[in-house]
Length: 166
Image (tube, rainbow, N blue to C red; front, top):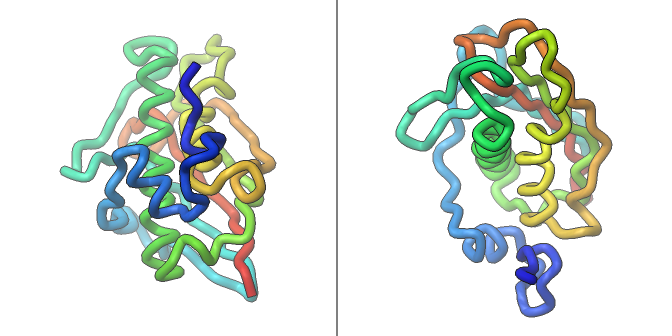
């Protein structure tokens, strides 16, 4: 059985080495789409605005989960969203090693009314954060909920709260 970089004994605990092991290069963080900032730091807490499933080339994943988008595709979209959250963290902090703990995620899924598997979708982001930060820093509290629509018809939007090292 393959181990994820978060659990493999030979993989470094440094977030950037784990990203490299996963084959992920952080893109520039997406700019805000309205009148807000991508993050706010207050004391040792970093509050990240909602990010969507925007690829590095600007392509945005759209559609209704449970209709034209299946759970597996939406999981991948949540993973892309997690990469965007990591990009914001990197730009805000200068070093992902400053993350003491991923505290909370709010995952929103653009779903049809009878869709029931929101947690499986948002696991795309949660699994990524645990792979990048490890079992001590990555596990977090979370809500995964369905919405009738999201901006631009994106499939998922996720926001995060992160505790920082002093």
